[in-house]
Every structure is written in C-alpha cells, then in structure tokens.
Length: 326
Image 1: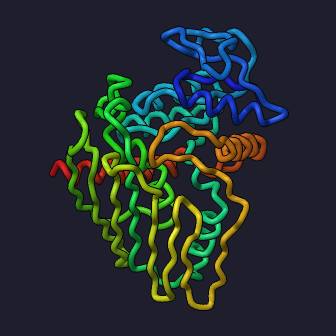
Image 2: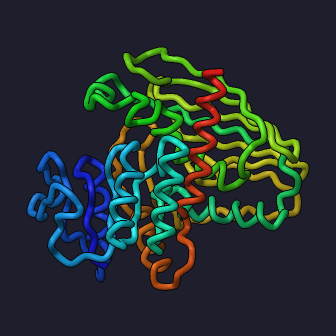
Image 3: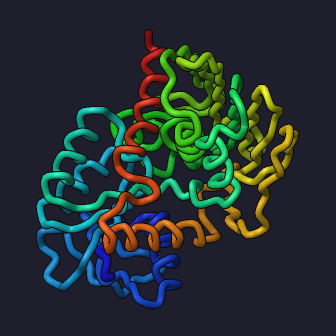
C-alpha cells in the first residue's frame, strides 16, 4: 500500500520507520501546513492540503495533534481513502461521531493507533476475560504514573491544553493504558474523579485519579500523571474470585490465578519508554498495527482497534474530565 501521512512532527518518524520495515508498503508523500517534512524522510513530496495531493496513494496516516484527528478522517473520507489515525480518535463526542459517520458513508476503514493491544500478554488476557476463564473480576487498578518536564509542555502552544490536546495525561499519555483497560472491562456505569495541576505550568491536569463502578459490581481505579518523578512503568493489577495477576507495561509480571496457567509470552519486544519520553524507539508495535490495518482492508473485517472501539476509550476519559468539573 502507498500512504500519505498528515502531520510531520515527532510521531511521523515512528510511522516512517514502521512502514520502512514493510516490504510491500511505502509512504509516498506528506501533508504539512507549515511545509516542514519529517526528519526521517526529508525528501518526501510535501503538500499543504490532502486535496492537493497529485500522486497515487491508497490510504492516509494521520499524525496530527489530538484535536485535529477528526478533521483528517473527514478529509480522507471525502476522497474515499482508508485511514489509520494516531491516538486518540478525538477529544469530544460530536467530532468523533461526525468523523465515524463520514467514514461509514464513504465505506472506508478507520483504525486507531492504540498499539498496546498488540502485546501478546494483553491479547491472551483479553481472550481469557472474554471466555470467563478468570472468574468474576471485582477490582482492576491501573497506575499510569509518568513524567514529563516543563520543556515538553513548552515545546508546543497546544500541549497540556484543552483546545487541541484535549487535556493532560489522561487523554495524552495514559490513554494507551486506559484503552487496554476499556478493551478488557468495557465502560463503567459511574465515574468519580479528582484532577489537579501540581508541578507544571499548563492549563489541564498533570495528575489525577478516577474511581469507576461497573454494572457487574466491579470497582476500578485509574491514576494518570506526568508529575511523578522520574516516571514509572504502567501497572494494572486485577483481582477476581479465582485469584490475581499484574501486567507491567503490558507484560504479565505476577500470576496467581487458580487452575489457569500463566499465559506469559516471550515474544513481546515493544519497549516504548512512555514513562519518561514521548519518543518511540521500537516501531514493532506500530508495524503490527499497520499490517493489521492492511489486512482489514483486504478482508473487509474490523481492524484490531476500530474507530468505534477507540471512541469508547475517549468517551471514558471525557467522563473522567466531566466528573472532575462537576
């Protein structure tokens, strides 16, 4: 497949690296309103607008800031181009619904880059949960205590604000981990949250906590932060009537479940140091998402992270923000 990438910031280099490892695919051009080209491939033809692209291509990768993803999906849909967008799908309900409706009307696939779903251990846990093998889960506690310095938030006027980023670590850094949480457990029926700014000069939260109650009785907690020095691995602790297990950065590190073998895999090599840096050094998970995206186009089946599935993740985060405001 031939791709056009919209957005030429840091994350565009990750996608270029991933596509470069795919023998049959390539990125053939970029869209950049500033005229900047990706550092990973400064020779790419650059266009101001997707409508101006005059070279053949099959699909679009959207690598713009959070609040611009819906705009990119609608632009691609208007041209009948399948779309893989950087996370999150969007930062408000109306924009996400509009983007998915445009995609549905155009008959295009929309996939979202929540690459942590490709982790073998996470996929194994998802299967066991769906089968009911792990028993009745009554507690799931996610800790996403990361760190970003002030220079990170000063690097772009939109960073850490609501208009473009959509908020702080819940919608930006921890949304990857919250996506796995929603993938596992679905949407809660009630959310209570508290957010604050503690170590940064920014508009949105840099630390917060949410308490979640599910219709089946499960009580969950989510902590998200970019203030916790020096930054820690994300940790999900799950407890059921059959036992407990822990995922640390999507790898099973503790397993105490009665009569269920530990499904830990040794195949997961994705080592994104999200605790301390926004830079992705290992592109293997993005490559896996792209291969899945291409397969979904060939077969007409849903990608691993469909637009609707990713919308649920954003909706939970919006509930966390709205609860704090209320």
